[in-house]
Image (tube, rainbow, N blue to C red; front, side, top):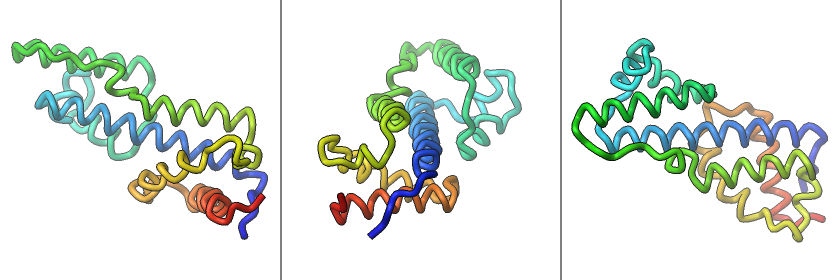
Length: 161
């Protein structure tokens, strides 16, 4: 049986932040692809080098708010130049799942993982849903973050409490 260690809250916060970035960047990429805008086009339209967005996407760069806004405005300009009327909505990039993960991250700061694993919080399903991201992001998460996540899953699976 696994025991939650004191640093797990910090490690899980880091993991959740990376999952938010992953989900956010994939959502933005999907919105661009749906409008036939490639990474090079959006990079150049924001005044950056041609590989900026691709690098940002691949490295899970934490975009500043101003960069996000410029990226969406640049995409809107490209859409407009192509005589299409299909703007990117911020709610399609910061979707319900991103908001749910961010909300959980805030709760984790207030309550802590040990208490959140109490059955009254019902977080088991939430953590199980994250597994797909942990697998897809293997090269972006640290060994310590992966181990903290594994300890949480083990606690859920063994119903230790």
